[in-house]
Each structure stands twice: as C-alpha cells, then as structure tokens.
Length: 85
Image (cartoon, rainbow, N blue to C red; front, top):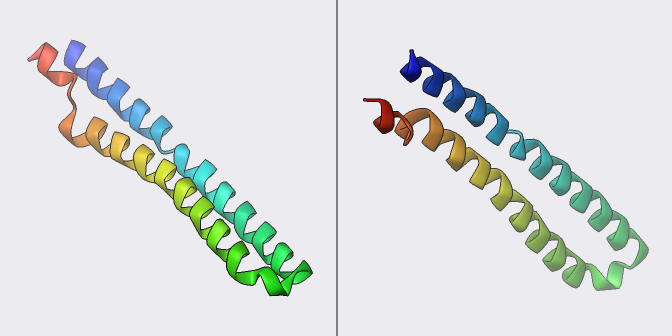
C-alpha cells in the first residue's frame, strides 16, 4: 500500500513539475512579441534587440527543461521507491 502511495505521489509531482512548461511558453511568447514590437519601433537596433531576446528565451526555455527533467526522474528513476522496497 505504501508503494502505491509513493507511486501516486510521484505521478502527481511529475504533473506539477510539467506546469513549468506553461510558464516557459508564456515567457517566450511575451519576449518574442515585445522583441518584434521593439524592432518595429527601432529597426536600426535590430541586432541588439534580437540578441537580448534570444538570451531571455534561452533562460525561459531552461526553466521548462528543468521541469521536464524533474518529471522524468520522478516517473522513471523514482528515488523515493527505494525506501519502501
């Protein structure tokens, strides 16, 4: 019974960890929209704007990837199950 509870908790935790993907998607969309708006206002600064936008998108994407890694660990490696075996 305890093993089933740990497995259920791990599945719920993995689902909650994947919520980080929603934030990353929203952040990247917001950054791309503001970047396009900034290039529209100042086309001569396009290179600097795009560099900054891509750096921000990479940081936002890393948050989503961290959430995915945590979910995969909870589902497949499951470090908590060793306490109940």
